[in-house]
Image (cartoon, rainbow, N blue to C red; front, top):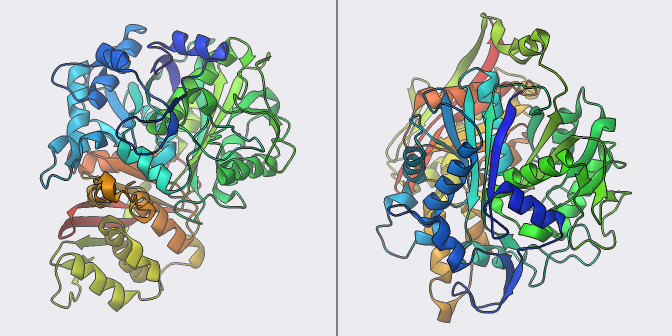
Length: 580
């Protein structure tokens, strides 16, 4: 249970948390209508930095993405006194990092092909010496990053975690959501009967977590990530993953202490309906619900952190922020949507969010009334206190462009190499999942690797162990660079402008996690982490952190990286946390 000890928001509404909170409290919005911006051939509404604002945070030698992150982190650090040493980690949540730099050039910059290198530049600029971690988990990236930071502190791996969520808009991203018919040309209307789509936004938001537990402070008291196992881009109609995340977070909590549920509230038809159903099924219909997209738009990797910060400061102020754009309920169920600012004496709140790849996350943030007891501390680490408990590898696979090895056995490759090898493996060992042919190379690599692992496992483990309560956690260096290039080609020529929705969906690396979850009906945690380079110690640390959530009986995890259609490497394992 980590404490929130400092924060910062930089957005078009202001360059500090207080400036942002006061603007939102006053009902101000950063959303503007653009008829001809960023070279995009259609009108849209978004929350974008002005050129003057960009000059304020631009730092020589850094990209705009890196500059914004560094500026936000520095401002957060100014409000607290922590020593930046080997006990401090940097976690960045972002969906597309420096994607605006990607061109049709055959040799994109290292900042694009290896986002972890960009993260190292951010770390160096703020004085952090440990290896940075990028959480690239679609729209839930920010909450995923907060959850990871909380776990690493609970595990005593670090004393402090600096968690920064950031995304900037570009023709790449806006055209992608346009291709999915998810954008609204006018200001979005979360949960409203007239809602037709989302607006996009850009921002950076930083939270500093620590093991400090001062009376009157704020703590992350509960957290969970669950997968729908339904579809890579559509929410589950029955709200499976959302409900499971809510139930996990509320276990042992008193709903009467909640001031508000801050929902994702994208103002798309299906997301808002799914959240409403999940909240209702969880028995939380009476709790006030709000959404902040009407002030900022969807800030992607920053959203989960930014919205947590605003909700925290509103709760501290005794306020529930109204849902801008909401007028008449347009979702089923008796949801208690907050239309205008209202007062509250309660402090605790719940942040709910969902994203592509079927992922859903929830965190319970509480106002601490007293010091944490020794019994609480002991309970947090109970899973690690039994020295006989170990994380064991049951099966292991390595796939290169020329070879496949499962455990100690070399697998027939049919003399195929590169992308053709992946197709050969599918045809030889699977055959019954034609969606394979729609996948990008990264997803194909992860799919065939997990298929071979699971087939090796069958016969030795029960269906209950094999399905359902399993996490899928992947690590890589190159993100989704191949799908990025493919989608860029569809928007590079304005005379032949036709953004491909099929290509855009795979420009998020965590889609491969979603494909595996859907195929195998896995409802456990799914996440994709980007590192500067393969680092077994960090990977094992995060794997162990995932198993802190005792929902999981096992995990498929490891390195999954694809630099081009013929240059890739997979090294995955099925692991189980067991008592010996």
